Structure formats: C-alpha cells, structure tokens
Amino acid sequence: MIRALLLPVALATPVWAEETQAPAAVNLPIAGGEDVIGLLGSLMLMAVLLIAGMWFLRRLRAAQAPKLSGIAVVSQIPLGVKEKLLVVQVGDQSLLVGCTPSSMQTLHSWPTAELPEAEKSKDFAALLKEKAGHLREGFSHAP
Image 1: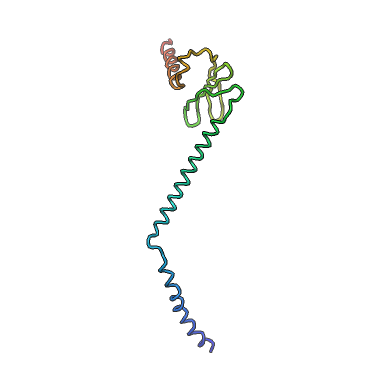
Image 2 (image 1 turned 180 degrees about the vertical axis):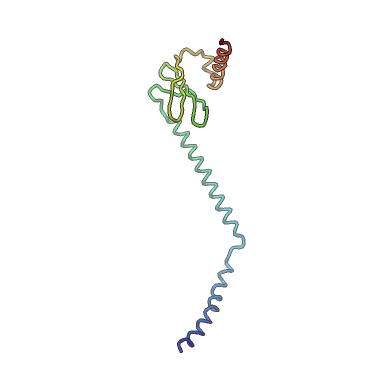
C-alpha cells in the first residue's frame, strides 16, 4: 500500500526538476572566449611587471654597492656559461683572475700605473685580443 502511494510521487519528480533547471540555461554567456582573453592578458601583464621589477631591483642593487675597501672589478668578459675573466684592481695592483664555479685563480698581475693611457681607454675585449695576438706571434717564432 505504501508503494502505491509513493509511485505517483516518484514519477512526478523528474517533471518538476526539468521545470526548475530550464531557466538557468538561458543565462549562459554566448561568447565564452572573452573571459579567456582577459585572463591571458592579465597573466601576461603580471609576468611583464614581475620581470621589469626584478630588472629594476638588480640595477638598483648594483648602483648602491659600495666599493669594498679599495677592491674594484674593472672589467669582465664571459668565457662560457659559468666561466669568466675578471680584471680586478686592488690598491695600485691589477689582477687578471679566471673564475669558474668551483675556483678562482690569479692568472697575471701588474702594477696599475704600468699601462699607458691609450691602453686604459680600450675596452677589455679589445685589449685581450691584442695581448692574445702578441702571445700567438711569440709561439709561432719559437723553434
């Protein structure tokens, strides 16, 4: 007897559910791509602002770095991904230093006053090429 009373209620339930869900489908946006374009634009803007902020902080930190008790990196040239040559001035001495991730070695040293003014005005890469050319000439004349 209870089954006979519940059967009409169970059959009528899907009809009521369809009537309440139909108006919700009418409010869907027609062009859903507008939200995706805005999201990607915001993401790109945030990425650009992040990169610009990191660049600015790096430049600001380099400009505020004080000279450490008479030690200054005069110039540097990269040799590879993590290797580089540095010309470091310590007092009245200049040092050519080779740097790798695991070590630093002094390759050559000379008094700073020893270089003529014409050579001081050249950039490090041109000076290194010139000195390397002199070394090659010296090795080619060797017996």
